[in-house]
Image 1 (cartoon, one colour):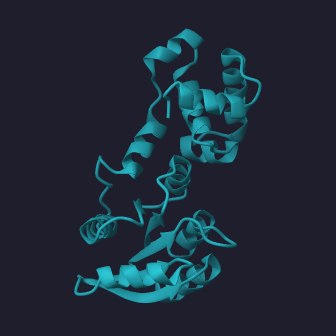
Image 2: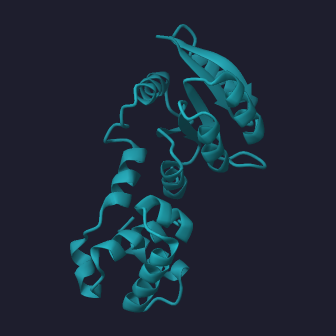
Length: 210
């Protein structure tokens, strides 16, 4: 089965590189876009199987584009493509519905594997950064956090804070209200004696929760 693909990146070199990698495969590149708005317009018109979407672009970022794109093209799978293995970028991509996250330094075999899995609706492999961050976000227990008397949910919220996520993003990830998130954050700050969410986020990283 042929896979129809749209490439979205603000660098022509990336377009050319991916196009070269997909030569003589079952993937057909049906469109190119260099910004988020054009990507949404193109995807709405062409309804591809797959979009390879750059995380960082001038103007509307790939992460901001992702949610709008999936609303316009609910049957399209989106793989985020980035130079950076940044846990915050990965977490935000997961929350907004990306199928996977791949680095621009990946080879042809890895790219083809990621594309194939995404189109077939398969989860990313356990070794992937996507899977690692997704697992981290879902974990609630942590034995060495008992000293601070944090509840399982508070530990989970703390991990999300360490990932640099906003209350709205945490709410969406954990499927709880923003008000409930705020309550958990206040409890975490009080129990850890942190002055603000930035301080507690840094502390969470130092405690190897991230």
